[in-house]
Length: 316
Image 1 (cartoon, rainbow, N blue to C red):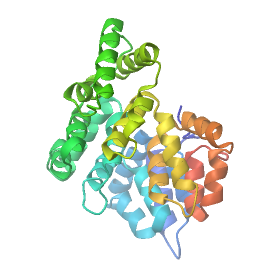
Image 2: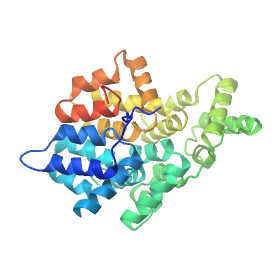
Image 3: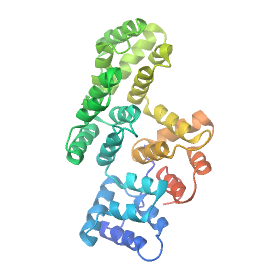
Image 4: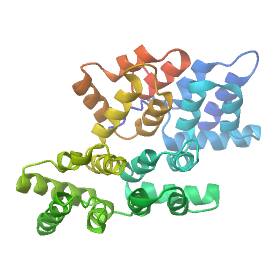
């Protein structure tokens, strides 16, 4: 379901590294050449290019990109060039800082990555920042937010499709009872949301809908101004229908006055290799306009070209 488009013939990493080095040389930078290479290589290929670049020129490719590019285009290229686990570790760390703090991005990473991907994020975080992700999340959050986020980022869910329907029915009943009494941050609600496999959670929420006649997120809207409830609803959506969550993030980033380039860049660079096809379908269904057209209408220059390449627009 990725939109990343890789050419039929991919040059050796050493050749790509040489071409990138040439793009940096002389007066000005060849931005189109950078897009043509980096926006059309998968994570393993980008890692190989970075290794070849360092071996050939004694410098990290990311540092060269940082020196040669600027603004939103630089951020998009650098974020996408990063290894996915390294990129998520960076995004998570930014989300724990005072001026860039975001419980939403921490939740997004925890709930939309596979167990193995999230494990690799924790490893990358530990290697880069010399402390654990859980430690930083616990320190920089409080109350119900901490109660939800720490187990979310610590999770290692079962990834298979096997489902226990008896358990789904009993836990749907538990969720309904707690929500009916407005015990939204009850330990049982947190336990179910933060530990069950995505398949099991989907089964539980289907049972909830069938047994009680309402989608769980409708029942959680009773306190819609509550920031914890908003985060809990988003977590459930990310765990079950992530394309709907990401469509909303993109819509809010693009529609209205101004553009939230940070949100737009984050979603495109993190989902291009994962499920951007589904996100694009959901965006078109929800907004009656293609994501490509929305991006083209709200961005410009090399930044626009980079984003459009990542969402699969144009030829390879």
